[in-house]
Length: 190
Ligand code: AMP
Image 1 (cartoon, rainbow, N blue to C red):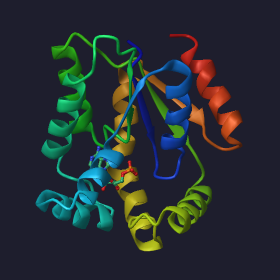
Image 2 (cartoon, rainbow, N blue to C red):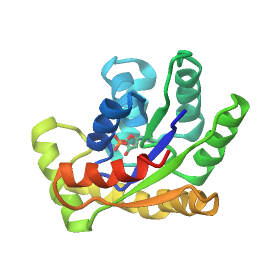
Image 3 (cartoon, rainbow, N blue to C red):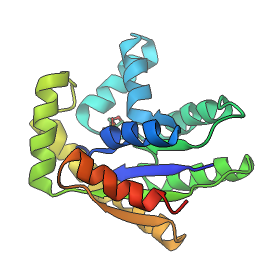
């Protein structure tokens, strides 16, 4: 199985490029942000608690995310060609939990793709997306907090996978086609 982690700051194009990878490589896309937004939209009790955290730009507690993901991994069919983990792991504890979860199922991560985009470009993309999607966390105040959380908690995830020899930086500036071509070049090797 080709199991990819899409890592990068908010607005770095993880979701957009994941869709393209899924199309070409027929992988299963697991986006923890999408799963959380679905739970929030359902109007459940837990959804409203999650909404408060996501709207602040903070991370949802690890246990909630890890349980949510484990149930989706267990639901993968025998024909699954691989998974794209989009927006997960967001910290080193989640990375360790993912590796344990995969190892227990005889699986492993193939590579972490680190989408690298300049800060001004990230902010411009997120503000633009906020206008189009109406996402509650794509406003200036929450964006600043999300970028801070990324620097402090998520960046060390790249070091963790680098130490496992499973790290690949991707230049995330340019057109969607240019960026996908760079990703495709890396994935061809697997
Ligand atoms: P995303 O769609 O990946 O940008 O995620 C949007 C928001 O959902 C984040 O700012 C967090 O509040 C929450 N979130 C998504 N993935 C995770 C995760 N793996 N761990 C904790 N919180 C998460």
